[in-house]
Length: 320
Ligand SMILES: NC(=O)c1ccc[n+]([C@@H]2O[C@H](COP(=O)([O-])OP(=O)(O)OC[C@H]3O[C@@H](n4cnc5c(N)ncnc54)[C@H](OP(=O)(O)O)[C@@H]3O)[C@@H](O)[C@H]2O)c1
Image (cartoon, rainbow, N blue to C red; front, side, top):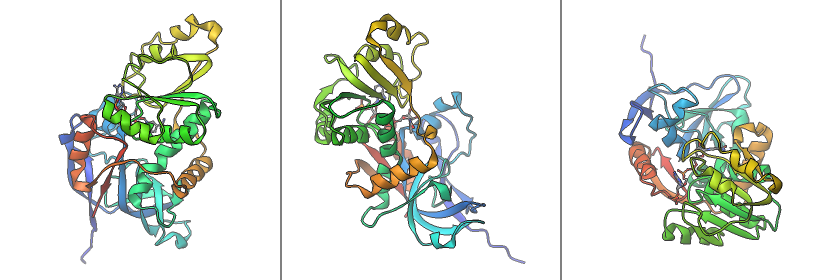
């Protein structure tokens, strides 16, 4: 008897390190299990976190094996459903959180991790806005941001920073400062709502009510010192590596200022709230900041652009 094994193209990590460690491979089609759907991908989001997994940096926090297929965010059409899932999902266009396996022609996602794609939202738009806008939304909420307060977004030009600037502007921030590596990127951030453009050191401006930080790293204490009394700094990314072990000293040295520090991960937001927020931002008029749209097989190029620091906003991969 002949057995047909349907294969799909995917991008796997063959060796941790540089972008050239990514390779196009053929894998069997994933099969949706109980409570899951199979998605024919139209666009796949490429995030800074993918580069951290590929380089091996995130291996210090979670173990990843060679053969790992990157990609946590896709948009496309539901092609099949697993046990216990309403068949009316088949044929619907959705955004989905897939945890891993997104850099592929087909991916499985829990049915609880879908947001419907509104008419007029392309798949590329969806993976650019999707979880990035949700991180920005909940990070500002986590920082207790209130209209009229001043905000600094550190690492503003990337996938998470750009929607944070946009959402702070929409929510009525009195001033929005950004750190970035060039005046040209600063101009693009001004077009999204930034009012003050700083270099990566943040030199020249102090006195923020809220700092949303995508970087952490050795300079974190210097940014804690930029908070107003009762100010709140929330770290949402570790692009600069972990902070120095004694970074809390800056908070204690300024005890009378009642400043706060916290970290925020979207993983801590209950599913229902998270996917409702994503559906809401997908249905809004938020403009996606798309750096480039590349073919799935160009994942190496996408990661080279990330490593070169060229990306403004997000890159999307398209499988066909
Ligand atoms: N909290 C959550 O729920 C959540 C969710 C997803 C991802 N993450 C984390 O967020 C991070 C990725 O964020 P992203 O996708 O926005 O990254 P990204 O798109 O790669 O860009 C962030 C920007 O930060 C700046 N930058 C990079 N390295 C820097 C450094 N060492 N010092 C100062 N600035 C630097 C760069 O802009 P300039 O060159 O203009 O300075 C870069 O464009 C990862 O750490 C990931 O684990 C968190």
